[in-house]
Image (cartoon, rainbow, N blue to C red; front, top):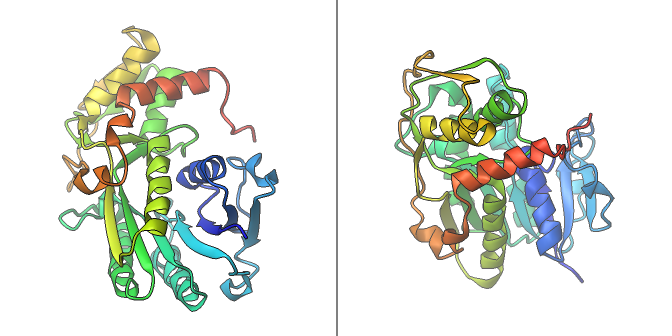
Length: 309
């Protein structure tokens, strides 16, 4: 009988790409946990695949799940709290729900829990702009280490992920739209000296496939992987590349570097330590940020945006 993966966050940006790659690269059945009111625009076509099933978690309990044959949970669901969501809501989604999920998984002999984390939450960093999110994820990380005595845990610490069909309030998506797809006369920015490790979403998904394979072939309790290229790029260089590819060096839009102030606790540099990751996957095959930008601009200009709501 085929193995089954339980996937959370499948209607979101990362989760939808993970779902697509799981269907293309594995023979596993996929059980999606979603809410009855979740917007399915990203995965509408994938939902008709006979290997995909779902449960509306707001109308059912975790105990109602048929846990038979589920050997892995891939947890992509998250709540950033950007839209003034309460601290309680952030904690409920980012801490209490995954803890409940892990406890049910242990009770039903699920072998592995693959968690999605972020560079926002590195131990030596603080980010007040998403403080509730960051604190909730750091708390979960401590619980993951505790639960690892009873279930294999892999913690995926993502650097600055970007790609097609991201949320409109995300930095890269907003820059692509404002500069290349629906150009504005000007775009206000900070000086852009911050450096980020931009990693294309399909490359991130490849690491999830590699982590799934690793979990099924190796004995361990807790593993953590930094997911990135290991090559930080300045925000200014990244945005200027979008403009160059979109306009060929034209005058518009005007990029107003220095118009916005840095946040008080701005992270000035973050990038992945890829030593551990290189043992999991060949990072040399990851797209450069230039290649990623080119793919996204082409995707939107060809009208392939799945957001046809």
